[in-house]
Image 1 (cartoon, rainbow over the protein chains, first blue to last red):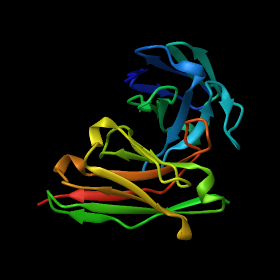
Image 2 (cartoon, chains in turn yellow, green; image 1 turned 90 degrees about the vertical axis):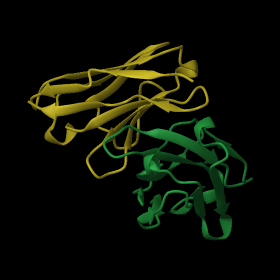
Image 3 (cartoon, chains in turn purple, green; image 1 turned 60 degrees about the vertical axis):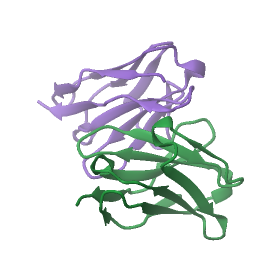
Length: 108
Length: 118
């Protein structure tokens, strides 16, 4: 199975700053099949990005995804207070679907 | 609007089974795969498997083979996940999630907390 490793585990930033989250895959992710989710405490994950760089419906354009092969990035251009949460990457090109262990974005 | 509504929290003893339901509304239930993903307390997300609500065909993660059964009732647009031989490390929130066709999950249920404790 493809193992996804997210870094850093925790990112401490202030509102208005730029956040850069990384997701590395143990082997190439086929067909750009990578998504990002946001999860807040007590809630289900929410789809942010699919197919590496496509924003899901209703997701603001401060969220962007990039990358290919084994290295992927989620960028939040200017953090808003509601963006402090845990973020997961997921690959769906190869079964089983796998998730990264998450990056927590916390208020500095 | 798309909604996935789970059944309520469960407390089970080790060795027992649990069946979690996920009722879909706001879309054609048979038109989208339904997946199950779990999350242990304070941990990450773990994919368990999926069902094609149209055909009933299933695919399970190897870790759960032999212990998990996913079914559906199309007459009430509801998917079910049955996990047997429960252990304490099965304590988790179990989510259903809809796949719009490409493998990612665009809508999630609110989750069902299953606690396994003697």
